[in-house]
Image (spheres, rainbow, N blue to C red):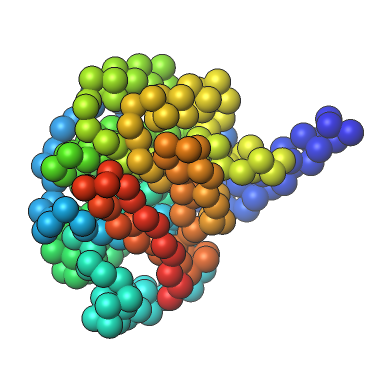
Length: 286
């Protein structure tokens, strides 16, 4: 019975992945270069300015530029601006985070379209859009375009806002890889701040059988990651990839799986309270 379920899972996932030859047959399975080939080091970058000890930031994921689905970006911007104007989103976001799968096929033109989308977000927030790499971003040698076009042009980085550190990880190949994992573990242990982690793949996701495909593929790595987050003052772990919305409370922090922007028509806002070292999360439809 278990074997049949695994076989069914493989057939479904393989069939979905191969619907479009433009993904690149080899890279659908291999996701292009490994994380060890992409990764150099943990890069420290500058943070967007915020006002006061309570601020918010916008979260989108799985925007999939180049996908066949009809886009409703104008609706998104209209809803976002209206909710800021009427106080439904308050305080207004100071910056934004995109949790991966920026492109659908990894083509350069898709990243260019994403940057036009980013410019509109930055016009509203006044801050930067910080991105992480997803598995779709690696198709058809997409890493070269990501590195060239997507700010901050690296795949493993962090910034600090007052007493909160933000870490952005590369799980585009389904794993953090030994080198990145060890650097992240060391950085977390030596960092006295509270922390928010942004990644494409969930560490836990859900307990549903098929959800295992949508979480980090190395279960030992995922378990060790969750242990680090619990020990090292994490507030929240933000991820996408599953498209569905889900959250798991681990006591000292919560993993939030953000619903997909394109296929679900949703986005999220996280409000951070530095005084209480806490963060609240809410999703919106457009």
